[in-house]
Image (cartoon, one colour):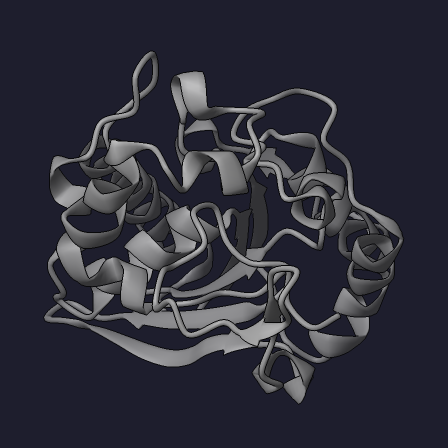
Length: 234
């Protein structure tokens, strides 16, 4: 079956302002995110792409635009099922504020039971994303052959949930996975099992530098995952 290249959107204005964007309209790439998108064609140079599929949200469409422009004729297919998780009432709120919400502990420790008020469940988020990948795998293979490669541009929690599915991990373990902005993850699907070929590759090791957390300058050792995905290297 086909090989899937998963790209998380470049850094957005919501990432840098500490806001959980969700499906809030008008969230664009910031200056660094635009630079990450501009570098994407070079990073993927020489890799044949049968299709480019994107979440319909602005930050994903902006991320793939330079790539599509560099490859005339390939076009962009928008796929609603790989759109950001519907965080409902959490959307547009500060992550620091949400940290004290009792639901956050469930999101961190037992996400398979987490459902966002006014939004969707994390279990439902994963199911729709996996269905989208399976459908596109079949479509790309039918049109371009079993050795075809295609790209999907999506969001942190979506990509993490797809990696968990590929590894046979329970959704309750998916917060152990991390995907930086504009990182590349590759999964090769076969008849019997998927193979994870790359995970969160950016070529930038700056995000491994210990971060300071809070006004007291203490190192961040909370062990909590960033809902929606982190901001990557500074």
